[in-house]
Image (cartoon, rainbow, N blue to C red; front, side, top):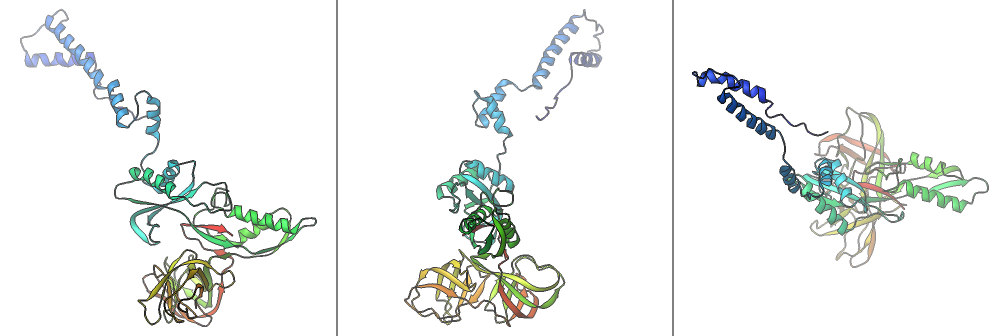
Length: 428
């Protein structure tokens, strides 16, 4: 629907003539003959005729103006149809949906999905940063067993497309997704006359498609960013695979530490705010709480520790200024306390009890063994939480919500994977 144009002056010929007739006695009192035969009336009607034409033009947009408008929006006057079409197309990026649509529009042949996160600078930190916007890009690909990661050229192309469309002072970052590797050990029994080996491969292929960032999810349009993976959906997918008689077992083993902490039932008056964490009594172990915890009686919480891709530092027990920076390659599938890295060496012994923490300091623990000097090291074991340990639950600012809680059990979470808003799962 076009914008209605205002009528700047709706007076017509008769209206103007009548208006002038009423003004004659005021300005020329001796003029008494107002008939059409009077030469003065004839001259007045001639001027009114010219005025009416001027008023008509006042309410029109001349062709020359249309041509000037086309030039202002950078379109050719030879193709006005395309110019009008471009005016209907949204240009400015204001909302998250605008940024996501324009990111795909920058190169629709190469970009499969885009996710916009406000107040996030994922190029340098995971913390909130006001005025920053991160656009996560999933490139299109036909290869299902390779993680879709955008190259620097594609990210640069999208960034250059978004910069002139953003609001002034907005800082835009185009980044790749954070993939969390998930292995899913399972045991299935095949129906009669079904090859067991082929059936297991069929199940693995279905799991790979279901968790895929482009073809995965319930609707097949890609696994949603930040949507948790739960074991019940995995069981259902396996059971619906043609040839499966029944599923004996299935577990989720992510390359991250998601841990159940059990204790005697306690009552919370209200739900825990975002950023709450669990801390050991000695302060040497701290893990954030994964997922919401509502008010009422509870006897366990789930915490999240180190994960694949984390940049961590190991600080020497006796010399905290002596530290080693590392990138977590994976978390052991057999032992949740074991972190794996690319091989590294330290110049002097790091004794057991040295602190290991993430770059932002949200996750803290200690190593259980010495790191010998000048030797290749590929894995470290951390203390984590222990059964019988005394813990406290605190808000993000350190306010104690509940203290002096004794752990009655510590167990790896294998029925749910908690994904953050910029994470996607990857089946391995």
